[in-house]
Length: 71
Image 1 (cartoon, rainbow, N blue to C red):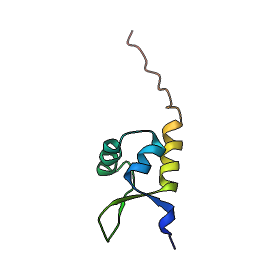
Image 2 (cartoon, rainbow, N blue to C red):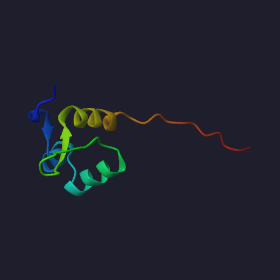
Image 3 (cartoon, one colour):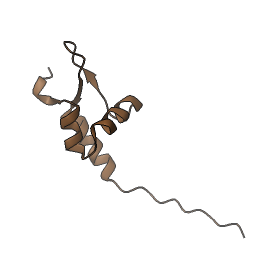
Image 4 (cartoon, rainbow, N blue to C red):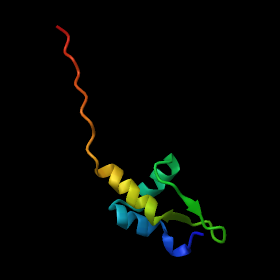
């Protein structure tokens, strides 16, 4: 069972990821971050584990793809 302490609100999620609150809202709306809603007040809630996974994915270097030049 998930406990409330495993979730953070938008402002704390922004601090954890080092971005603005509006960026968190945009990413949540775009589906880049999993978001839940508090049924009592409708506030956005983010799981700490999901934020850590997001950070680890963002920190991974992109694979470089070689493009062959036309001759």
